[in-house]
Length: 162
Ligand code: PNS
Image 1 (tube, protein in one colour):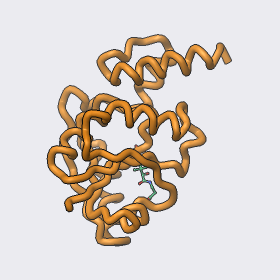
Image 2 (spheres, protein in one colour; image 1 turned 45 degrees about the vertical axis):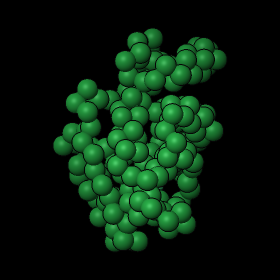
Image 3 (cartoon, protein in one colour; image 1 turned 90 degrees about the vertical axis):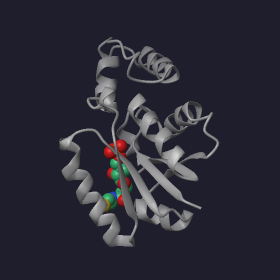
């Protein structure tokens, strides 16, 4: 059983994340998509909301399991029999940070990291930009799945002016 993990903040999940998750699901038997809960309190969406959106956008992928993790990612991997972490690389600017984490995770627990190169359509895409565009009334239709667009609208409508 080739079981891998796709970790992230997913605040919120973008089309770029979905692309990487789908490709990982084609390459492996089981993909655990896990929301890191360590610093989630400071985000826009709660961990439960992020998980719900991820479940909805991966509902047609039977080998994808959505969950959360706290603490070190390698501990989640150990506890769930995960042998590798799958990450998307968008641009050279991602490389240094991802390389450090990959090497440290290998050193900590001999967990491999596999990189998929992002679809060039999404090389500029990150959740923080999506949040900013949505906050200032921009159109995020081509950046996130429709359900996320709806959740952003609901969240921002409830946020008031302050
Ligand atoms: O979407 P993000 O914010 O790039 O996700 C980062 C995440 C959650 C994957 C990363 O911060 C992480 O793995 N955090 C868990 C803590 C951990 O294991 N740190 C050691 C890394 S060497």
